Image (tube, rainbow, N blue to C red; front, side):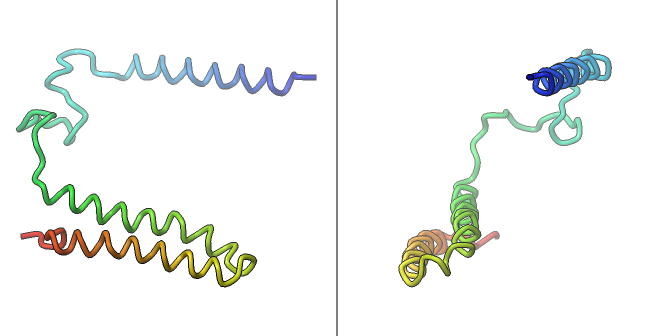
Length: 114
C-alpha cells in the first residue's frame, strides 16, 4: 500500500548519501582558510563582518519595494476579474504605499551611485 512512498524515501536517502560522499571526495580539505569559495577563491580583503556603506541599505529597500510589488501583482492579475473594483482599489493603495517607500529612498539618495 505504501510501497511508492517507501521507494521514494529510499531514493531520497540514497541521493543524500551519494551527494554527501561526492562532496567529501571532491572537497578541498587542506588549508580551508586560504581556499575560500567566495570571490572565486581569492583571499578576502576585509573581514566578513565589515560594515557596508549606508547607500546599500537604501538600494536594498528599493529592491524589496519592487520585489514585493511583483510578488503581489502576479496573483492579483489572476483574480482581479473575479473580485471587481475592490481589488483594483486595494492594488492602487498597495502601490501607493510602495511609491512612498521609493520616494523616501530617492530622497535619501538611493539612486545616486557616484
